[in-house]
Image (cartoon, rainbow, N blue to C red; front, side, top):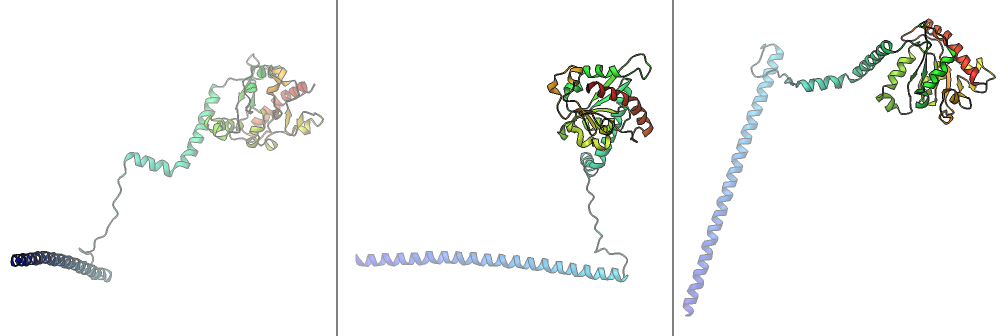
Length: 294
């Protein structure tokens, strides 16, 4: 019994030795295979590097021969041209607008200005006098009573048998974006470069662009004793102006004034044209100031 047990233990030891031998053999074979693969990869890399070095050396020699004039052209060294990028029509249009946006903006601005001016000249009525309302005040700008009031002081200047005053309302506001979007900047620029109107009604909103000290006549020199006159303007608050044109006195704020532009050379008119309008309209302003100063 003991001998059978000893024989069994011996067989188990032999079995373990056989198993270890198989695993060890497989491991050694894998290691040999991996080593062979690394050797082959290293050989291929070395071969590619040698081929590349030979190519570079050949090109260097060829380049030296070209520079020395030994040969005129080379089959080895070829001049490379950058590949021309083919753009779609839409991409070409986008590139054009991107590279020329400022010139296009200026062109659009002046074309718009010219179109507006032409349209205004063709479609506007032929009044005896035009007054520019440049303040952001709808009550005055849209008041038919204001035009009726002004017609009390004018004559039939154009000889068409009727007396007509037109007020051009340009609601210049503090919001520059709104002024641009609504075309107010264009309208303002157009009218200020025309000699058709010299009397203006302004407010603090437009003073920065109007520059009244340089653009308007200094009324304080003409009416030094009038308490409503300050520098370039006859100020309308605390007068009967609201009653005369039929609006609520609360709508007449303290910054509203009436003034007259200096004759000067303009983009669309010369000094003589503006002087003619000034000589005709100043007596009207004088009558308005006299009437509202009572």
